[in-house]
Length: 83
Image 1 (spheres, helix red, strand yellow):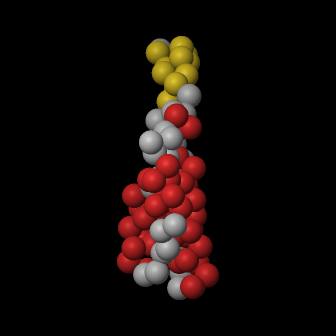
Image 2 (cartoon, one colour):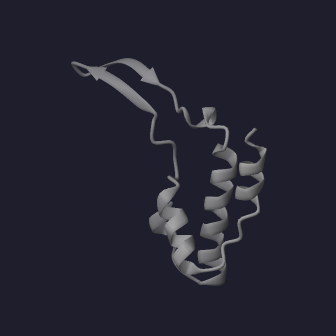
């Protein structure tokens, strides 16, 4: 059911710096859902990263990587702010 979305995301070509910057800002560098639950200074629980449960996770990470490579290789920009 999600194969058309996967293929579409995989075939997206980054062709402008504006789009590459937008993609790099929208897709996070690391999973934002991982948390440690701390009560009175002691860790009582750990919520693991849930990004791997997203069926499009690998394709989105690949798209972000393409955008960062475009910015670094084609535009010669410093991408350290996105890492």
